Image (cartoon, rainbow, N blue to C red):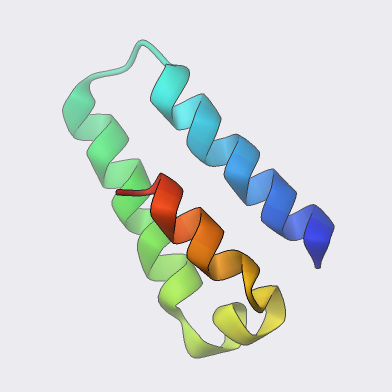
Length: 57
């Protein structure tokens, strides 16, 4: 599970560092927020969800 959490954190960091439009970055982070809000995904990730959520704000 830790590998999944680390991959999602890396993805958030890559979204932030890309030269894409801010609107696209917001949409991508919103999609990730929705994904990790899913009860099944959240139960798999466990406590890592709070760390990922903090990166998405």
